[in-house]
Length: 422
Image 1 (spheres, one colour):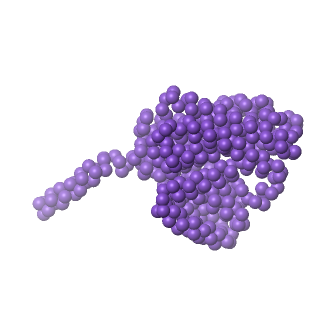
Image 2 (tube, one colour):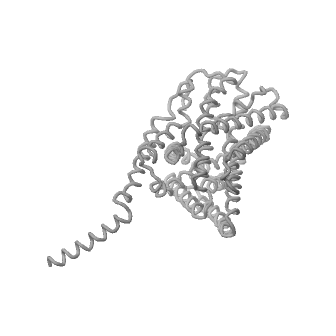
Image 3 (cartoon, one colour):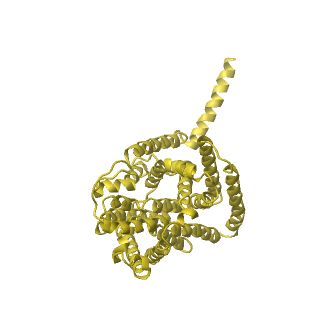
C-alpha cells in the first residue's frame, strides 16, 4: 500500500513537472491575472472618467480616454510585462468580443429611417470631406512607408491608415455647442450632423480592405470567403428569428451577447474582421428589428468599459520606437489636417446650403474620437507583423498629437464657455 502510494505520487509529480517544463510555472495563471488587472482598471476608469467636465482643454482631453493608452503601455512588455505577447494571444477572444461589440454599436447608428431626417447636404458633405482626407493621407502614407513594405502589405497599411484618418468625432462639438452663441449654433449643428455620418465611408473602406487582404492571400482565403458570406447571411436570419418577438431585457441581453460572441468568433476564425462583421450585422439588424431601442441602450451601457479595455490592450501592444516616430506622426497629422481643410473649403464652396459657413469649416472636423483607434487595433490584430505594428504605432501617436491640437483648433470656430456634463 505504501509502495503504491509512493508510485502514484511520483507518477503524478512527473506529469505536473513535465507540464510545467512545457508551459512554464506561471503561464497558465498569467492570462487570468492580466485579465483581472485590466478589468479592474476598466471598471475604475469607467466610474471616474467621462464624468463632470469643465470647459478647459485639459478636461476635454479626458473624454478621449487616451490616458488608458498610457496605462496599457505600462502594463506591456516594455515596462511591467503583465500583458506580454503570450498573454495577449490568450486574451484574443476577449479583444475580438470587444471589437465586435463596438462594431455592432457603430452599425446601429445607421438606421435609414432616422438618417432620412438629416439635411440632405450632410451626406455629400461628409462624403467629400472624407474622400479628400482619405486621398491626402493615402498618398502621404504610401510614399512614407519603408522600402521593406511590399505588395499587398504596404497598400493595405496606406488604405487602413487613410480610412482611420477620414473619421471625425462630435464629442468636442457637443461640448462646444453648450457655450456657443446663436451665430454659431447652426454651424455646430451642421458639423455634428456631418461628424455623425462620415464614419460610414471609413468603415466601408475597412470592409473592402479586409476583402482585398483575403484575395491577396490566394484561393484558400477566397474559398473561406465564399463560405463566410452565406454563413453571415445565415447569422443575420438567425438574429432576425431570435428578435422576431419582443423579449424581456435579460433575455435580450443574452441574445445580443451570444450573437456577438458567435459572429466575432466566426469572423476571427475565417480571418475576417470582428469589427467589420459586426458593423455590417448592426446595420442590417437596426433596419429590420422592432427591438432597436432596447438593443441600442444595452450596447451603449457597456460602450465605455469596452472602449477602455480596448485602449488598455492597444497600449500594451503599442510599438513605441522613441523620438524617431515623432516626425512621421506629425506628418500624418499634417496630411490629415490638409485633407480636412481642403474638404471643408470644397463643400462650403460647392454646396449651396453650406455657403454661409466659414471656409475654415474643416477645423470643426479635426477631432478623431474612438473609431480610428478601434480601426487601427483591428488592423494590427488582423495583419500581424513587426512592420505593421510599427506603422500602426506611429498612427496611434499621430492620433494623440491630433487630439491635442484639435481642441485648440475648434476654438477658432466656437469659443469654449461654461461647464458641461457628459
